[in-house]
Image 1 (cartoon, rainbow, N blue to C red):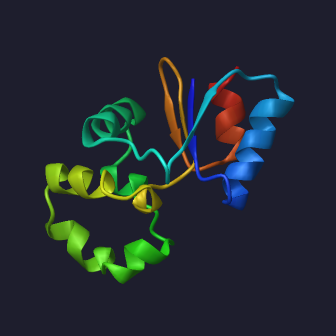
Image 2 (cartoon, helix red, strand yellow; image 1 turned 45 degrees about the vertical axis):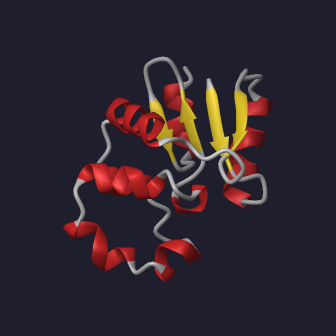
Image 3 (cartoon, rainbow, N blue to C red; image 1 turned 90 degrees about the horizontal axis):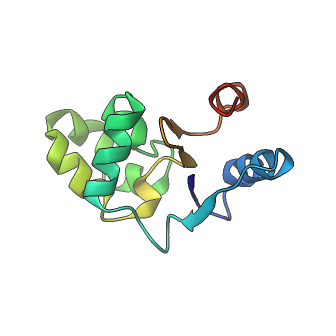
Length: 116
């Protein structure tokens, strides 16, 4: 499994502790140091079944500074994926990608269900 996170984020820290306490094996990747590419994001998004907007860190400083709340509705999916690939801080985290699922954000009940 791939665990994309920002180590300084408290939600990511909780998700990591959750995985570690259950002995889940994963490859950790710092989303700020090694941002996912547009192709990676496209694959994660398609596998997740979620709207693309769910991949944006809407509470992040960068999201607000760029005024994305108003700009995203006018952007096509390729433009949104390209934008996400420019800065890991724009991407909602953590992301846990397994063989047949992708979880975005940490909601413990959802993660417990996916890892059964």
